Length: 81
Image (cartoon, rainbow, N blue to C red; front, side, top):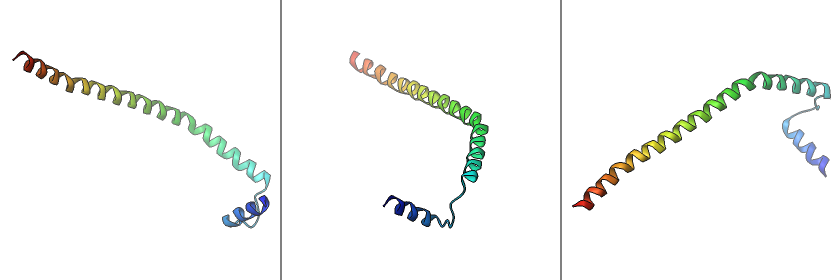
C-alpha cells in the first residue's frame, strides 16, 4: 500500500525514472554549498530585522507615553477647577 502511494506521487511529478543516488548527492552538495555561501547574508538580514523591530517597539512605546502625558495634564487641570 505504501509503495502504491509512492508510485502515485512520483507519477504525479511526471518522472519516468528516479534520479540516481549519485545525482541526488551532487544536488545536495550543491544546495548545501549555496546555503553556506548565503548564510552570512541571512544572518546579517536577521540581525537587522531584530534591530528594526526593537526600534519600532521603542518608538511605539515612546509615542504612547507622549500621547498619554497630555491626557494626564488635562485631567489634572480639570480636577483643580
